Amino acid sequence: MATTNKNDDGFNWAFALKEAAFAAIITAGLSFPILALRTDMDISNKLILNQRWSWLIVAAVLVFVGRLAVLSYAARPKSTRAASTAPQSDSSKFIAKWISAVGLLALFLFPIVVTSALGGQGALKWINNYGVQIMIYIMLGWGLNIVVGLAGLLDLGYVAFYAVGAYAYALLSTHYGLSFWICLPLAGILAATWGVILGFPVLRLRGDYLAIVTLAFGEIIRIVLINWVDFSGGYAGVSSIPRITFFGLPFNDNVGSFSNFFGLTYSPIHRTIFLFYLILCLALLTNYVTMRLRRLPVGRAWEALREDEIACRSLGINTTSTKLTAFALGAMFAGFAGSFFAVRQGFVSPESFTFLESATILAIVVLGGMGSQIGVAIAAVVLIGGTELLRELEWTKQIFGQDFDPAQYRSLIFGAAMVIMMIWKPRGIVSTREPSIFLKEKKSVSGDLVAEGHG
Image (cartoon, rainbow, N blue to C red):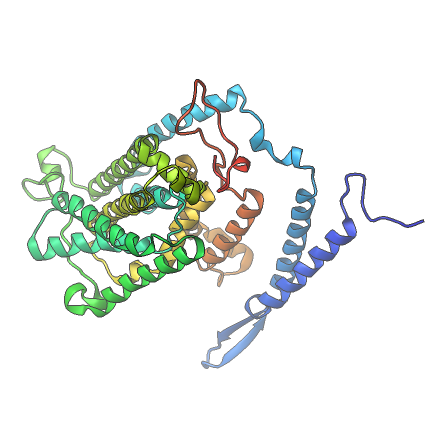
């Protein structure tokens, strides 16, 4: 009588153990020169080789256990895994209704609470490195969500529009003395113009071909900024960019400054708090425009284009204008964010707009759930805030040694988190959303029921 390796649930343990062992062996082979061996310089400047076999063993064991857990999860009946197809409970609807309001209130109170708890100097890092930095990527994620999440156009060169906005403010302010409030709309218009310029050549492209062309466009912009030295300054970039003012009131300790006008004691935290509320308002503007456009005919045309371009054409929708509006609007918000980046940093260079930035923004959109505004915001907080938080993990040196720097492993942890996320939630953190147009009653659509995986 033949024996079977499956249990009562139909799980094949022999196959799973074999697959997990194979994954562990592959991991050990690929990470051998990175984890098991480390080169250092001794006191006489000679290269010595240190062995760290325990690191290799730990990595192989973790991959073995992880692969086994994934196979076990995948073997479960689909009815127990497809929780997204089940109707929402009253508590879930209540949470979804109030999460935006509570989150918005928390954002407005964040600088006040942090400053009250840590003081001006202690709060400076948290507001700038976490609050402002995360809000920039939330705004960029929402802008790219128009192109990728709603229109279904894979854009790998989004950072090019970010660079256009940054250099627009940097050059206009330094050469012509224009203020930030005048340059902000100009940066958005210039970036939108370049979005239309990119859109025309790629009207007939979809999928991988579109991704390759947009990737090339982003690299072309960066290379032009590097080599056109008379225009952009090359690698040296543009420095001494004028700082932002509070509608004409500078943030310094002089007469007529912000602190002097309001009778406050001067502190550098004033400028940082103002920058936080400024990027928060710009991000909320991006969200408001996106949500309003989603309910208009152009928004519904984006979603139709995303699901099936041939069916979209058969309905009489002008796909040319639909694609161009998606590129232009997404680029415009990237231009706004780029202008803010320039005024915040006071310096811009081509090295700030590499492909890694585009990949990070796209990862935020995909991991958050394409088409989901809340999902993109959560993904930006996790990815950007998580990588910044690694700088604070000094206590890990007590475990791994004084030479261990957790900040050096940000990219490794970032990649591992993306792999885990794609296995656990392949359609993103928020895989369902309410339909833009509904009849009588709103019903969340599961990601399993639509082609692109976002209801």
